Amino acid sequence: MFRRAFWFTAGAAAGVWATTKVNRKLRQLTPESLAAQAANKAIETGHRLKDFALDVRAGMAQREAELGEALGIEAPVDNRALPAQRRRAALENHKHDKKHYEMLDEKRSYNRNEDH
Image 1 (cartoon, rainbow, N blue to C red):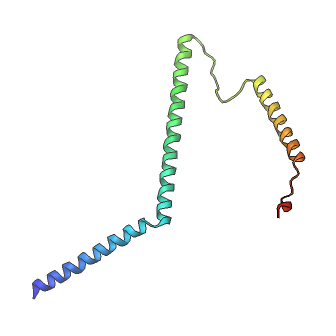
Image 2 (tube, rainbow, N blue to C red):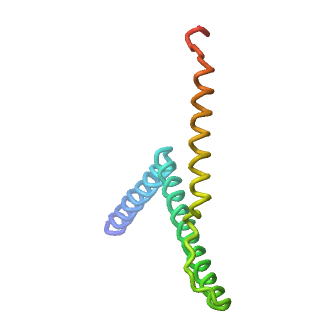
Image 3 (cartoon, rainbow, N blue to C red):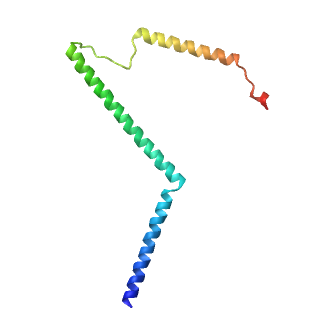
């Protein structure tokens, strides 16, 4: 009698455990769950790439400082800023491009309702 009760309980517990595992796996394989997992992996990869880029930038700055010290150049270099002349030229070109695109838009008056 006790053997039958033991095996009945063991079978019931194994069935509950297996059902729980299968349901958990099925929930992981739903499209929403797969999309969330892919998004999490993409975000994680983006963070790793950003960290790598920051490490490369720090290494570049360190090496540049070492080279500047070896060559006797003391002036700090800001890679993000353009020299004044190039900055002005870039801004003027940007204004010119904007005007150019505005003129093109005015010439292309396209009525989408004509196609219907």
